[in-house]
Image (cartoon, rainbow, N blue to C red; front, side, top):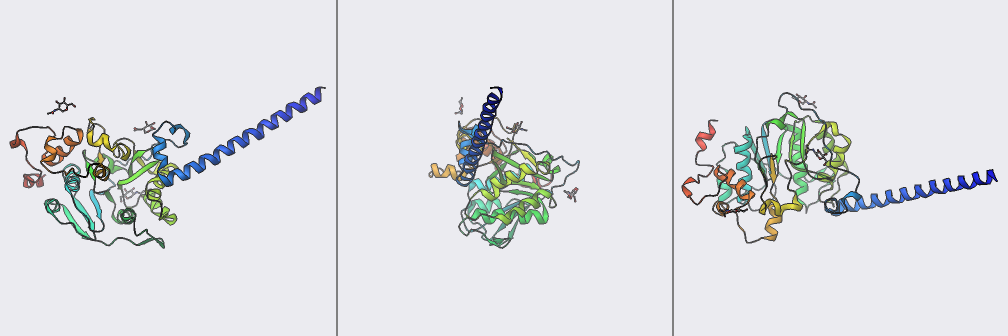
Length: 340
Ligand SMILES: *[C@@H]1O[C@H](CO)[C@@H](O)[C@H](O)[C@H]1NC(C)=O
Ligand SMILES: *[C@@H]1O[C@H](CO)[C@@H](O)[C@H](O)[C@H]1NC(C)=O
Ligand SMILES: *[C@@H]1O[C@H](CO)[C@@H](O)[C@H](O)[C@H]1NC(C)=O
């Protein structure tokens, strides 16, 4: 009697073990499938910010890289402009913000098709701007880059440039709103837009950073079909593995993220309170509001935080005023600025 009771007990225990194992394995497989599909289709980001976010395992993590007590990132800005397309007022504001707020020694603009037009002519007034002819890369570690995804060419070119000279890479729709010097003491700095992504739209790095080498090396697995896998999802996975090699800015570089572009354009939020940079999701905005054209006049009456940021960059004064005599464009006092 006793032994058969024990037998049943053991059987139950075994069944439980097998049952739990099956359950765990099944949910692992389900999560894995969800994960893979998610990275591929951007679902991950959308899910992570929705009510089902708790289903996904990774959480926003921080890097543990220690700063040096001296600068390791050169005070040089790098921008890339591949293929001929229109240079608008937002692009101008991006370059002006880098010039006025970051105060780099050089702003190097790599392009295979130098822009034209009013706003580019104005950008050329930036004293430290250098235009460098550069063709887009066509392959990485023997893998052909997708010819239809211009962003992939720039993804690879920026890692190449940063590996040879270091410095700060900016996408052409980044606004700098606070000095970056404190960040130039880390070997590698990147900003987080969401739990699953690290955006490569701003990277501060020394040319010899170990993480930069690992990131570039990860392009041996380059996936030409997936828009964000290599640069964004993969960088996050890599940083998760090598947290001691990165400094991550959670809130201050890539927020509001592209899912929240309406907050950026229409909201009121404190700034630069916790911000070094803003990623201006101008393509999202323009798709929804194709008739809006940003100009120096248009930003004068924008009663939003974005309006304040634009005025701060262009006029050096964030306030909204009907008195135009207070409006002095950034280039008016260039000579004074230059003696800084
Ligand atoms: C970064 O995000 C994590 C997870 O959300 C949070 O625990 C941490 O406090 C954040 N760090 C900073 C500096 O905001
Ligand atoms: C990279 O080079 C800088 C200056 O040359 C040095 O201070 C730093 O320690 C180096 N970092 C690494 C990871 O080797
Ligand atoms: C700007 O918007 C705020 C509400 O967010 C309002 O109180 C204020 O009067 C507006 N200012 C102007 C000049 O329209």
